[in-house]
Length: 65
Image (cartoon, rainbow, N blue to C red; front, side):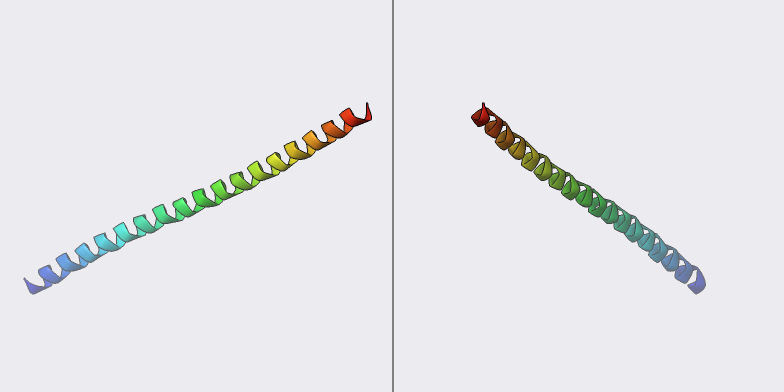
């Protein structure tokens, strides 16, 4: 009877460990998403700078005309 209780508690702790691992995986995926969002923001900044330089070169072309 005692060993049954111990086994039951072990199974419970295994279940909890498994759930913790699942949580860890979710956190890992969230971190990955964060990295992607960070890279997208960087791309956005680069595109913004490119648009700005295009605008400047367009203005220069206008001034030469």
